[in-house]
Length: 536
Image (cartoon, rainbow, N blue to C red; front, top):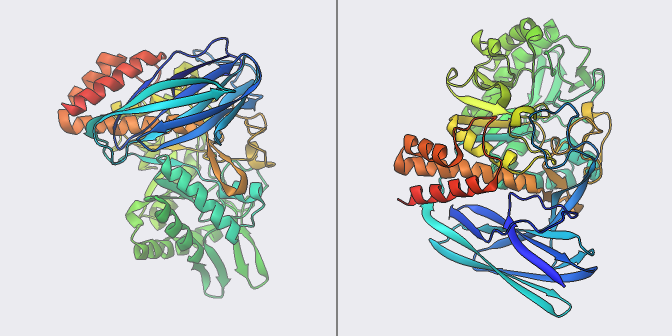
């Protein structure tokens, strides 16, 4: 005996849930959009199910697997909707599906089915699930309805920080060896396939989440040589990285930070060839405003600009000063930012920070505030970016933790449209270390960076065998949100921005970053209305 149902991609199907989720057997998509349903099954005894999915549209199918979280949410969470708040197993990992599912008596299992409408004409496309349990068969129907409007290309600039040192360590692939480049390429392709078009590019080993006085593995792309005539630079590896990223689908480059995190107190770790051999020439022991480091930046800036001019990408490059400085760091940041503005003036200077005074004083032309501090920046900067990380969980702000309902992940796309955001930043595409990079973790078993961050914050992709990235359902749902943004922009081209804003208000209410429906039905109503508006 078995039960089965198609359900929404906004459901998180826990194996120990008492009942099957609500049925959802229709998916409405724009032409060129990818969208997902889940197939959920339960047997009354342990058994092996054979499942066959058929559709005229190309469909990718994954097994949804639960992953353990010892830290799903902070104890101090308030005004914060969670599915569960205790350690346990949460549905997250999407692993390759080979055609069969092993079930336990009474436990729920689910498949993730992603349909791709690229090149598809408007119309209805049936999906069929044929499930066999030792001769007992169930056939379930569903359908993808492709509307007549073609999804516009992505305009939002989206970066989720790419940590190649984590890949090197996890796969035991020496940095810049053949295996390293092969793995980096696979993860770059996965990131680009899920909407990332800007990539963190380690000119030097990024000074991010590093214990004071300690180091992360060297992934420095700029060759540095100390000579009698001063500093000289080799951009061979940087060019290889840029060429690979362009090949994988990236358009923008986010150069790693020129000063340390949380205050710009020191220089990043920089390795160089010197008369005494290769050694670290700058790092935690280098004051950020020292004459030696100032002289280094004075030589690097023009040389780097000449190189990116030659590559034709200067206008698509961003440069960082320091990540997440606070108000008590503003004096030091101001002096460091002046060096960035002077020597790297060809690039757009951006930093994640949430104190409006940094922008008001002209220290950072492109501030990136966290979403719960976005209001002072909205309407007061030439273009608006935002980000979230582990600190954004109270007051229902969007985020992607294991414990959060998927609507808190997906709604971001609608909010980015309403606030007319130009970019979004996240810090952890694949951070497989503990907090402060004290040791590596196995992300299949330790999902919270050593207990520091709620599970789901540090990475959205898993390191599968053979260097193959395995997605998470959170990554898929976030990408759906990016497609919502593109769909809204598509409708705007046809009906105007005010009509689209009215549609959002009519279906979802007067939403902001802390107020939006948590139920699925208003969101489905919104998507149906959006398709109809775009077609009209």
